[in-house]
Length: 480
Image (cartoon, rainbow, N blue to C red; front, top):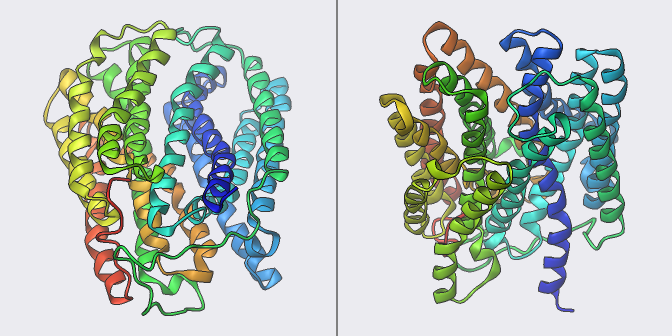
């Protein structure tokens, strides 16, 4: 078996953890109304579900740094990438166990503790898996592999709420959120068993403990002037990238988490009718990432162009199929096929550059959010859900650019980036505060500010990397 085939086999094994991240993160939206009713919570208190889960990433990264300092060596470099993944999965499995006593005793605090521990495990997994996905093959196509992994993640976000909703309520379309808290424990105990099974699978897989990074010496990527630094925080591309991850995850999560309240309060939708549109938002992430991952397969140019046209619509078909199975009316969603054309055009305009991709999609995010704020009715709903399309490719772009040239500090830099996932909880909370003082419709100004910073980062990081002898401006031939 050649090296390329081996690396693809390793990559396929790795992406199982990406699926779990999406499955659990999106399923939290199902827990919020259940907990709110069962524990008699306010809307703000119910959002502690998101806060507990996303802040765990930051706490996990801090623990990672403390341990690394204590042992005098980077933790992942010491125990190995595969072993770190296995450890992260075991930690997450321990978190799901808490759902059993929490359900039996009716303890909201224990439920949050369980989610927090699941998030801690995910923190270590993300620290390892993102740079590992980049490393399993040529670095010039690393961001496409990360995008492909993200597409698997968003498959999890698409089916996760459906499966968890069915497990808790017995029907994915049931608008009743008064299910007994007892009904939560079995689905999450099953999830814990799945974590352990994947941990065993990865332990005996060919995923490497010490991956070899293939640096691109051609296609516009150069490293001759890269400076070796003692700490990852000495690299400005990383420091600015940390804030970029913070606002990116923030706008991604807050746009979706505030959409149900907007549709219910301002547009008069019922809870049951809102569910498919939330599904569409998360499916939009999958649509964009399936398109952006095409270059990872090294297809011929004519084939690549054809596949890039049909891949988004294949992903859209998955969304339609899932919601058809759930019993939702699909008539209102066919028009979204036209909006996907904007994504395809933007993907071609990026010409494969992470810098251009980040800038173009951030600008489109601003435009979509502005249209959503300036309109009402279904136009505003489609504008807000299309934010998912333009968020879809931003994570791999930011991650790739922020880690560019870090060398031996890559895993440390990855940990710092994962730390900033807390933006998902904090930005959502901030938008909620603004909504309370103004309106949910106006609160989306937070998203515009987030996208504006991402556009700034795209411009700034290009000059930073150029000064270090690294050029990502013409790195590959398609989107991310």
